[in-house]
Length: 401
Image (cartoon, rainbow, N blue to C red; front, side, top):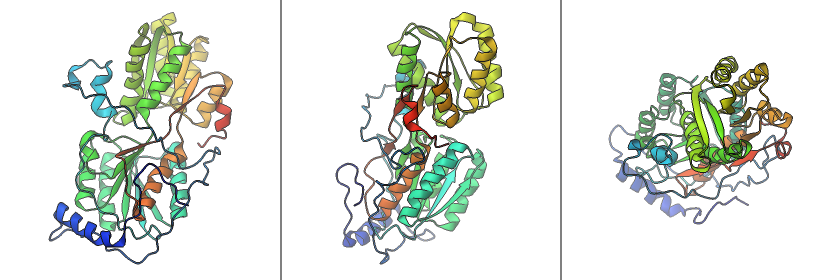
């Protein structure tokens, strides 16, 4: 039996396929020199039960947060608000939820088996290896041909790969953007080529969301607000803290910093942000930066937050050990084997749970269902949010990456 999320997800009748394709051609202005929507074939539509699929840690592979966020009214001028005010980041935190989309390609509604999907991945990383593993597992279940191209964290390479994808004419593209802002023109090109796109993992700036069927991935803003609550509790709601930030240009660079900063301002006004720096998630650089913080701030430094629980956290923990500062509370975005082992050992107080394999599985699940004629009902699909502590980390072992 096919997994169904939410109401109104139904297969479309064959007679609606032709009408939908004609409507798409009319709305998008398909004309001379533009590729028309692919014609429906007689490929049988086979319902796929993904409920039985499991990730490496034994959890359900295909998961989605069924609760949509409560979206507050947009401030009149978010940029005019201070950076430690949640409203300042409204356009980024709620990107995609309320943005009006352009007319989208119509589902062929003729089955997923034999379809070709190209995944444009922004870089190689152990997390993304697990991401691809989960994506491949779902692709195999649907009989989808999957091809992955990696941009080495270079927007120019990703731009070239978008051109390559357009030339290859896949049935759908899943893109993990190198840069939230710079990906918008690339999404526009794919949309103009009438190739359906699902954006995934890293957020897209609001101007790019109108070109994609949907976005899937972790709720970094919501997840880090949950982590902020645990961090504040561990800090007794007072004291100075610093933030080791994620990669510049990526959406977590902002979300894994200012979701926490704004939440702590609200729930723990006695806590003080002392400094924030990026270390490009490198262990050696993190060691240097945190060692400097310990020297500069002395006993005023009571906690360190990290946008990464693996390479960066190794450097953070080494700096704390070198200084003999067992009193410094540490929390991070997770959840690698490195980070989970740190939590188990008591070296890190808490990390977020983020299923890497589920992150890759979710957009492919939506793609497979879309090929089968199941409408994509939401503009954003979040993975479930959890915070892992010493008492809960064992239930998520072995680690996915």
